Image 1: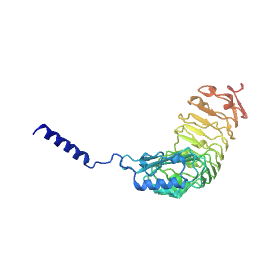
Image 2 (image 1 turned 90 degrees about the horizontal axis):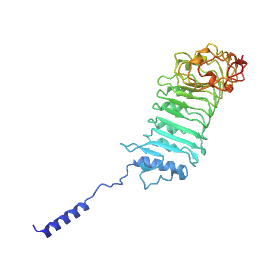
Image 3 (image 1 turned 45 degrees about the vertical axis):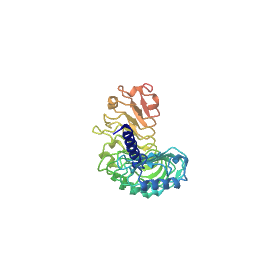
Length: 330
């Protein structure tokens, strides 16, 4: 075969190879149903600039604020954060069946109730609807979302009481209901699985802390700035593992003298209550990072040792007759 013939055959082979259909490198990964739902959500918010990347001609797995599963390409995360977005959370959110993370956060113009359509999202592990102007009650339907490990409804205008059904969330690690306008008593939550860290501060809750809370170990409890009352000493004990507690600015009234605090405790805030008695000597053995018992009815000498003298007088002042460093001598 001469050189000319060989060249012609190679040219023809190359032409035929280039003419063969090839898979498109830009083939869309995003599920068509999920894409349709996301565009409905965008439209319901009036096509805001925050969702400008949500364009029908682009693969929705490449849009901002969403995440696709790397294997199935279904939408598993919707995170809309800190932007100019107005309106209510659309019911269409409930039509993203594989959603695991749902976040609407720092959106001051987000209003209305939390939609019941969220109850359809059985795969949810994280819900964060915070720093918005959501109103209405804390929905009981969250109890149906058994895979939830984190629930944050803080910094809203939610009203009504705390649903006791939330105690059925057996995988929950933390629940934030703080900075709302919740009223009534704290329910008898009976946790049958993981015991969550609980944040209920800055509400209008009343009554005592239920005795059921004494059956469990927590890492963080923040019930500050409510109107709670009664004795909370049963939450402590040598067998507990709590690290951070804030019960400040309530109406708690009990004798602190014989309370046994766990070795795990690093932050204790009891300021602005009606707590009486003296500071237990055992407080000197704890590795405190923060301590405040001011504005109570405590008496006696502040025990010497540990971290107790490292705090300013403001951590102890305005008590009935507490004395000793860093306060004036007894």
